[in-house]
Image 1 (tube, rainbow, N blue to C red):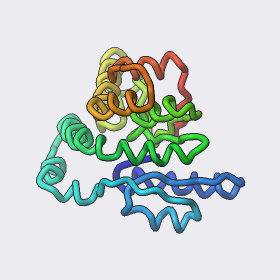
Image 2: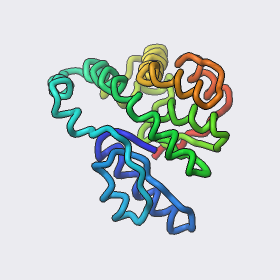
Image 3: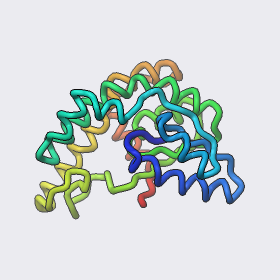
Image 4: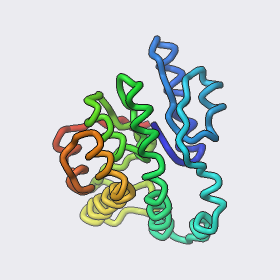
Length: 202
């Protein structure tokens, strides 16, 4: 399960192809625009109802392109993604019901993890770049240099909370629908960390 631009989706077709060659049945869950990528990789496909290109061509998307800083761009990305997350929730649940395990990109992990938990499915995160807060470097997503150990960690935690907030409105109804207790976005992040939820990078 992934969402975003071609760069957020295409790498998972290679992974899916490799898993299919190893004998697994694989379904890529993402935007309809990328169905051909899945077909070329020889894997199944389940469409999400959002068209990222149409969103980027909207006035809100154009404002994103005009952002001159990584932080400004991040703020606009979070606002745009937050408005779209709820539209994807039902399709993520539907696709998950037909699955044995969920492999979740960073762009859908907070919601996908709740879906997996509610359906009692194993899941793991698959991030294309490091998202975990660390003292070693600033979040690569922001495209900035190091702010020192303390600054890097604080900014990383802030970024993680911003990603969680994308799903702030979509998460409670999904948790309720799947019989899970209410859990705020920050608490959901802490819960995944306490559980030692596996996340792979690459």
